[in-house]
Figure 1 (cartoon, rainbow, N blue to C red):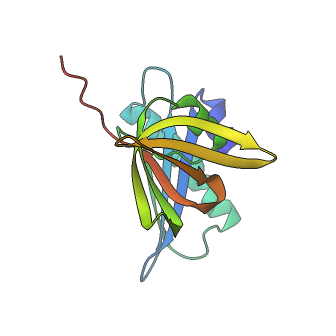
Figure 2: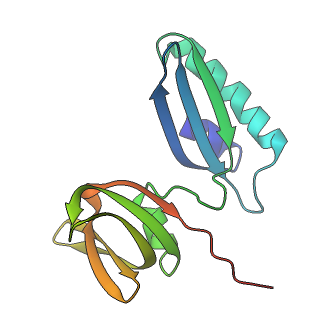
Length: 147
């Protein structure tokens, strides 16, 4: 999937595969400089759809959605956390940390400490150090900067 998207000068942001009652839902989020167009989505949908059909993945019927990541883009890769330092994010963790599972705040840093990746988040003046391996989901949060 990623080589197809990169061959069109776009970046794969995230992929979700969800099992529904009677079929799979495959979501692809991609981006490029200047933003994604409807034509971009259509082109990638056709190419990736052909690949999924050839490889019979997922097994059985599926729905394929291709889109831009939007204002609340998912943060899934290490380079996403590095790129969006200084931005407001929302992080959901697997196990409670300081009695919380959801953190909203500014991503201050993304560190590598002896091989362990750590998100440093400032949430309302409190600093949290969240191990990357505990993160279930992370997204940018929309920031209204005013006009």
